[in-house]
Amino acid sequence: MPPRDPRRPDRVAAAIREEVAAFLSHGLRDPRVTGLLTVTAVEVTRDLRHATIFVSVLGGGDDHTGTLEALRGVAPHLRSRVGKALRLQFAPELVFRLDESVARAARIETLLASLHEPPATDASADSPGDD
Image (cartoon, rainbow, N blue to C red; front, side, top):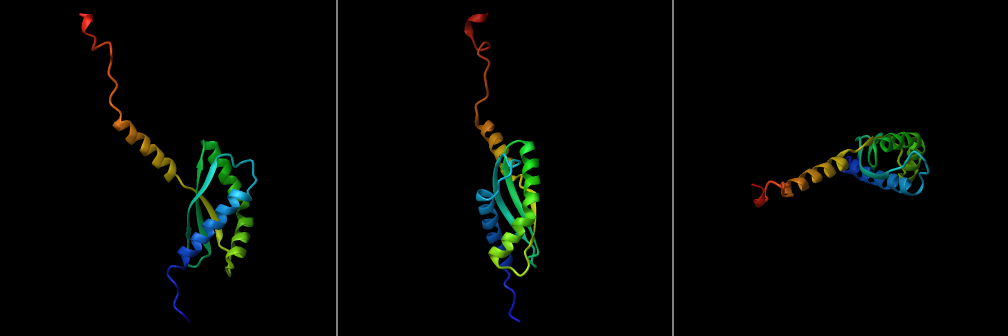
């Protein structure tokens, strides 16, 4: 038996990411998906039986909830599609998780930008003719 390729789960994860992203951009027609949806990462177990797909949704809290419900509903169809496209012996079980890193990065960027702004001064306190 040949030795297992330790990089195979990473390659399969990348292929799953591409397939899921293509489906979401062209094949998903669900009114619950209202925000901008991006597949940010995919983690696959060593045995390739389970894949966790991290998605980022730009929009409000209701957008997140509806989008995750829509993704969970389409997961069985997407699992079949991924299995056929990648010609895997077993199609991995797909679990969608919300990736908060994009929102967190935007918040940090906003905070850092506010640190670089000069402090606001009170113009009336600096007027010389008010004594």
